[in-house]
View 1 (tube, helix red, strand yellow):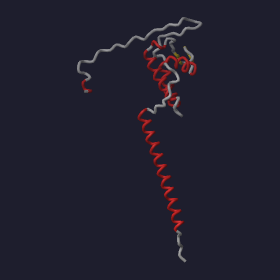
View 2 (view 1 turned 90 degrees about the vertical axis):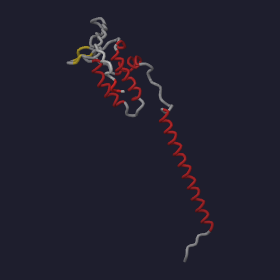
View 3 (view 1 turned 30 degrees about the vertical axis):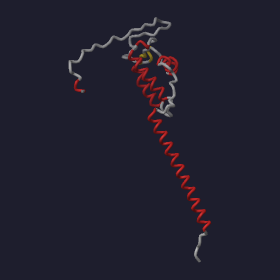
Length: 169
């Protein structure tokens, strides 16, 4: 006995195959559109970037960093922490704190971004507040004394000889 296929069954199979082919083509076009949109967002910086949570480094330092990571200033065991209430007058501190702020603004948006940022903070705080940091000559006021701010003297530099940097060209 030979199996015969009726013309109607063949037409149904062709019709179903055409429908599946059309669905595959529609899905492939959708994937291509999504890939194109993703590539355009990557080139344009997404256009949906979040604005910073804090508008200045000063706002970030006073409203986030200092309240969130308080450190006792002065002698603490074998460690001495230095802080200057006029931290914004120390160029090195402003540079380091601004870098931390920018990094924090990026890290807060990433799922696991805070972990590397905390390692960076753990590295920077002892430099900022340590015995050789930019606040080493400043004294924080309080019940026992008056606040004193001293800018660190600039390090001397001798200009390089003429044509010294020409190797770069």
